[in-house]
Amino acid sequence: MLCGELSGQFTLMATLLWIIAVVLVISGIYVILARRDILWGIVLIVLGFLVGPGGVSIFNP
Image (tube, rainbow, N blue to C red; front, side):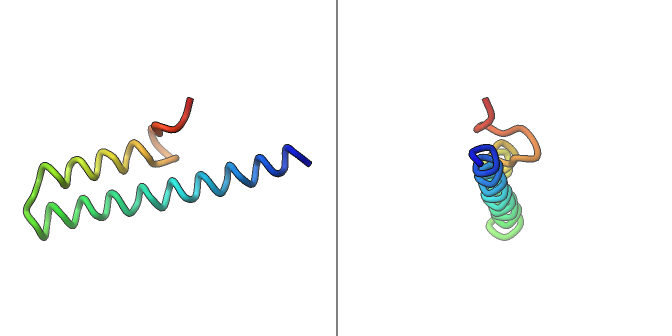
């Protein structure tokens, strides 16, 4: 029972991290294209890549 609960929590956390990563990357692209602030856009995109569960995640041990 405990193993199933942990699996569900992991799936929920991975989904939330994926959504946050997508929002950060899209925000970074918007900042670069619409506001012409390249440095802030790059920072947001890099943060999106670091948070994303599919790539390098700062939350993985």
